[in-house]
Image (cartoon, rainbow, N blue to C red):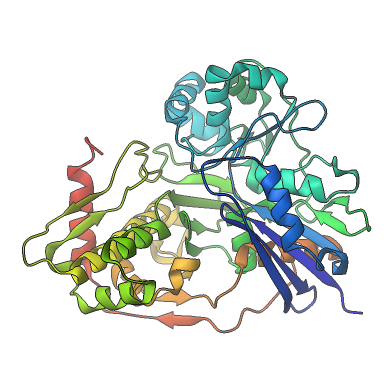
Length: 469
């Protein structure tokens, strides 16, 4: 019987499970179950969704791995019970604590040198600091702190008590050092007000089997969702994935350890031993949701309206910081729509929404290239691959190469986080030096006439509003 592996994506919105042939990468079956909304969620809801999404699939797998939403904070007490609802990556209440942590560590340069990234409200350490200052009784009860994917992996293990993570997801906590390649317990104590919490075991190698299910299937270390997506897309050094989902993520595989003291680029590790610097936006697909609801159209209608307008939306520009922003770091910002007149059409507003989304992502690509240009041919990314739910919108696809000013590869529809987790599970079975090579067929490469005036208007608006957004 062919070997099958199960990849699980425990994302912000849902659990997605994909059963894959371990040798070819062919998807054999896939299922999903929704998660509750919000930025503060009982993590036991993820386990309920896991049971639904994996029903009939887990018992068919020889190995399993979990890719999960990054940065979330899960606290367990001495009996392994959840102490309080998990704070998710998109909960920005800890922005003041992020600034305080940077100051306590010794400033931006010292912080980035130590952990590889500049803490923002998304990172786990800042959430721990917020809990220490506002709910100290929760930390007094807690004995362990986990990331979301760790919590799900733990439940899959025989006995439900395994306690492990991987360097990719760990590098987004704010208390893992990419310089030392390990946990930094001093930084953890700084975040928790001096309290010691147990941290998950880290694998000695990325393909290590960390535990077994009750039926004996291997459980790989798992990883963060962005690291899993890079695995699922088979990205190599210099490749950039641009994911447009709940968040917008521009991630580049790199052999070099990144260090950006400005905080624009986070210097995360990946799931293979390399690095995955990324620029992340809080606002992404929801920008299109806002425009669609405002204009009372479906997504296809939004695309039609946007494509009927001209480049630059007849002078209308959207700075899409609806829910605060992470890149740039403006946690209290709100969106700005500028340039409307009595001649402004519904198509102009639709176009401004799509262009605003893409300009925000183009800024992320530029930040990666500015930081890592010396290691890139010609100082530019080798390839740009567009993924995520909003990447299926026709206006996003057609305008992306125009706004980015270069060709863009549209990946075929697929659950790339779950697929990457499955690839990691297959790697754990082989124990080889490199993960298995799986071919991804059906991608499209698109080109368009560049529209640099769109980025110019966007950046001018961003600069003008920097002091009051």
